[in-house]
Length: 339
Image (cartoon, rainbow, N blue to C red):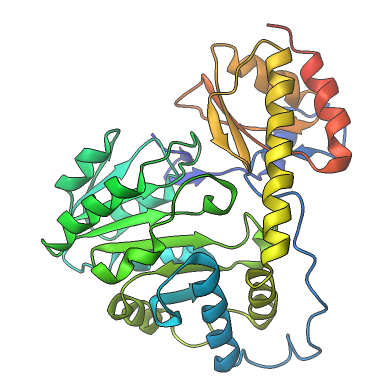
């Protein structure tokens, strides 16, 4: 199964504090929500233009956003970039690009929405655990680095898979939602060769998930088809302003990567003190695989710290990073767990 929990056809994701309160009604408030992989340090953008909400988004502003995204993500040009209101909205559009359905292979366990989008597009979906199995699909999907495990498929292997699929009119989708906070190598610069589409998420690394902004990077022909389906004004005026500014800010990105790395190391050390080694993750989230995972989940929940668990894989947990003023409570909560 994937990183989302399916509840009656609906996929349960992190960030649901109503669920946390139902599970732990006596926990202290305010809740510390570590159930997502969103940077707790939001990008300090400049004030929004006075007319950001009162006028329709300007196509010229969208062009500037795409240029900033191409430079930041290493795409060949702005023509290789489609922008939308979050990568979640882009998934079903991507799944429909091949038109004829067929077989979809999702390298799993991973983000569950990829499999859902492929099924909605009419694919026979198989969740596989070996990258070589992606070669058998019409639509192949991998999240790199993976959510929730942090697994990384090497760039060369991804390019070989894309080349194989391209020769058969098929497509490899590489979701690089957490690439900004990892050591993986992007493949966004290689999309002109065909058979390859890369997804990039803005909100996670920049700590602004509510802005709803994401990108698909591929050959201009596929990008044009996606933009036709997205239609005009697919990105809001505020998102255009914030995204363009943030993506151009190389220094903030450099400093933040170092800061997140230090926080990830600190969180790992807290778990080591409890006798629980961290099994993987990225600098935006940590992944724990342990026989006592459910006890850890409850020990933290009772102290008002909500982390991500997986009902079909009870030995696994994913934890985001605490904000600066939350570390004390997290340390206290973990100290109450003894393995």
